[in-house]
Image 1 (cartoon, helix red, strand yellow):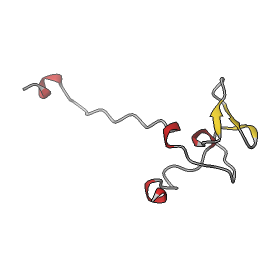
Image 2 (cartoon, helix red, strand yellow; image 1 turned 180 degrees about the horizontal axis):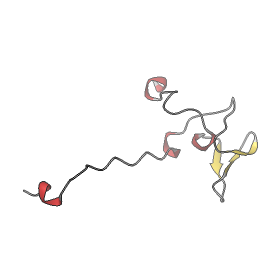
Image 3 (cartoon, helix red, strand yellow; image 1 turned 45 degrees about the vertical axis):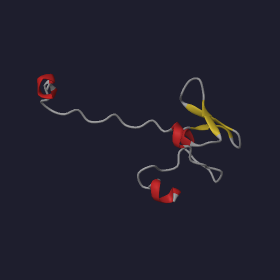
Image 4 (tube, helix red, strand yellow; image 1 turned 135 degrees about the vertical axis):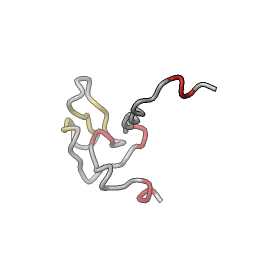
Length: 72
């Protein structure tokens, strides 16, 4: 079921989404339990996807929307 929810084409493996790694204080690399300090866009065989680490994209704004349109 997990493979159905996670599309490999849409969310490719990245160390910044891995359960075994955490983002370094500078935000440029990941501190991995298995490999040490790695680039946040790389991945390895020990990759395990963590849903809570991925930041969703912001929704698109509605063009030409006025606050008056949403009043009752």
